[in-house]
Image (cartoon, rainbow, N blue to C red):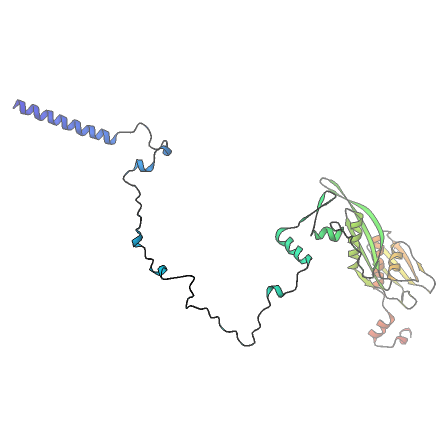
Length: 310
């Protein structure tokens, strides 16, 4: 009995010890973290049970019967038959049959796609581009040929060029203001003003502005006014009077220039009030616009022109 009990106790202690040892081995805490250095622990070694398997198909399993009977070099029975054109159909012209593009059109298209091309020249520290339209229109730089004057039959005359300054946060900005009168000396005259950092550019801008404000001057066969008139602009006031043949233009300042560019040869003018050249020139234009021909007045009244003075 004693021997049997000792044997059972030894077996139980052995089984318990074994179970405890297995438990400790399976759930023991690792001394080094598993993800401490993931680059040195390949996934296949960590999980050997999840290995990828590659299946390679055999050549006998691939169906190639279609390609064995098909020859690309052999003429096939399938022929493309396009539909017939309807009656009255006119084929569009070919791309090569159209008119040839000019060099300016090609350059404009190139500029629109890729931007302006540098011409290799510089002016006042600024690079001149081949298709820089702004520089060509204002200064004429960037091209070998100089900019020609507009041939529209209008003469230009500069009345005044002044330096003007604009006070800004960083200091003063210096510009030039030009007053130009244009006319054909046949009854058409215009007054314009323009500002720019250069005198030449200011004159060009004012000439363009004057061409946009052209008015007609009524005159008699003696190249004088049909009647007296007065005009004011701002603080300037101008009086215009007709004169007999041979008198000439008796006026001063901007009034004289406006009348001469309009083609008036016999007239009297007087400036009253301000001596500003721009305001006096525009006041002269206002006075001219108030004038009317005798024939126009008679036509509006519906009477012969001889009865106007009755």
